Image (cartoon, rainbow, N blue to C red; front, side):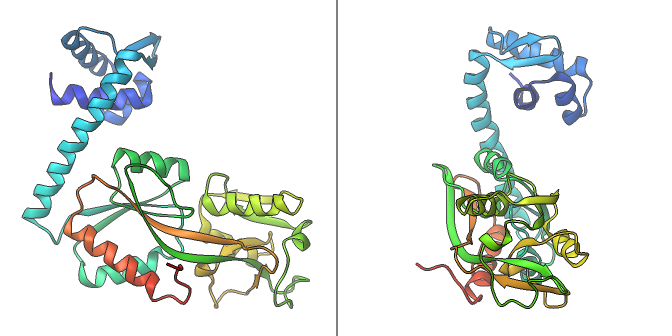
Length: 296
């Protein structure tokens, strides 16, 4: 049994499609199929039920996948540990976020002491973040809401009130606050379903009798305030994302405890590099210095 076979099997098991898996591995479909066939021959059992190029893991495959994930996870941790020992002030941190409003400030602070450490940041849904966390593919996640799990280390960081962004000239722009019920007939711009703040807002609005009407749904929260300024719609914005330079009024919500909780998440068994330890310290200090830390 070869390491290459295990890597090919892991990718194919997650895709369950030969063409897609071959593309991710940058190999031909023929090469992938032959490698998987050799693995099955070594194991003495088929790992997939085949329907053309579409595959389904069978009972043998599901059992072997659990072992394969653990084995490759441990090998990857060893690789990272050796890299950290040989060059602790370099490398790349793998980060995922469902909330990006605080990330620029956090990375700016981190870069002051670790200028040679690079980042790879993914903006993901809660479902995708949970998958990345459980697979151990991410150093840290900034998530709202928090994600719980047996292998997930969850540190609560901050309670961030949600406000309503209203363009100057709107009939509510001279208000000092507003209720959710008053927003029933407004049009909104927002992120897609599956992002924490969207699901939280929709749930709170439903509790007072309506579902928000969205004229725009996207994957880039930073774009929302530009759309509000252009009078495309109103937006529910976390307080940490407010920008005083924008021609926008931010209204607190009176009658609902509309607050998102921000947490720092990691896999309990993933190797924590020296750079990752430093990053965690910066994150904790960053939120600790803000005016509304979460209650202990």
